[in-house]
Amino acid sequence: MPESASAFWVTAPGRGAIAPAAMGDGDTPVRALYSGISRGTESLVFRGLVPPDLHAVMRCPFQEGDFPGPVKYGYSLVGVAEDGPLKGRRVFCLHPHQDRFRVPAAAVLPLPEGVPERRAVLAANLETAVNILWDALPPVGCRAAVVGGGVVGCLTAFLLARIPGADVQLIDVNPARAAVAQRLGVRFAAPEGAEGDRDLVVHASGSAAGLATALDLAGFEATVVEASWYGDRPVPAPLGGAFHPRRLRLLSSQVGSVAPALRARRSHRDRLALALSLLADPCLDALITGETAFPDLPAAMRRLAEAPGDDLCHIVRYP
Image (cartoon, rainbow, N blue to C red; front, top):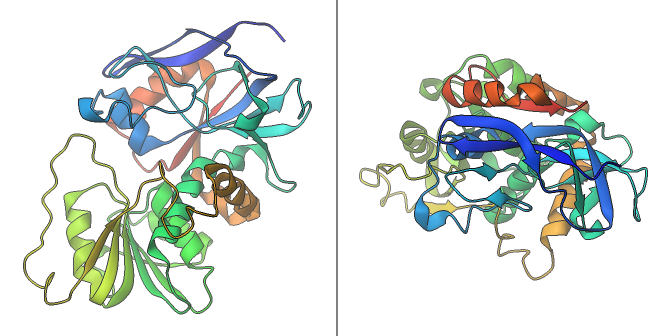
């Protein structure tokens, strides 16, 4: 395997390039097959909107450079181990967009049988959805709503729908998400048509309007999980009106830490391995809506940051 590599770099806010990168250290060289663009977070990184006080917190594994740039960023890559304990196996790694690299064997996980490489790029976002449920602890028969039909929102709805007796609505302003919701086995509604009195509402739209909708749909003593990340944008939260009379519980969820309910007994690696195992369901292919060759990634990233359209998970294909 050649000891040279190319990676996608954010060179300055709103600009990117394919440029040389360090191979890294470790006993497991990996040749990339696909990587996934985590559109919400990576758009903020691409536009230079990571707040200075969060630069350390927002570092991803094997990141090179610093915010706002030049920086090598990303965390959802599938490849083939070229040597080491997993030689010849398909593996997943939390690694930036890069065609070849070396990491310790502990940094990769083998793909389960029955999980294709393209679908496996959803693992990082599905891990986030797993953590949301570990934070929320929804009961059997839960009446739930997910506001925001992006990748994380769709994956959260997918998991909630697998709870026995659950009634799950996916809510989005984009009517095209109705077809995706049907594939995932959940009901769809526009914000104005959503049913209220929910036991649990997960907000994943990344907008103030979505947060207001989430709070409005929550029933008495319900839990609202805020799963959006806004970068450095101030977000008004309508905490007047019925917020206090309903005794609502507003809870943040972020994937950087394992949820408290399972933190003593589950590691980050355990959580990621669980996410990979849950990707065997072919209905999740509905979330992969675009593909770009690695050399064309700078132009694709700029488009996704400026005008994402109906794209959900956009994947990068390596030579």
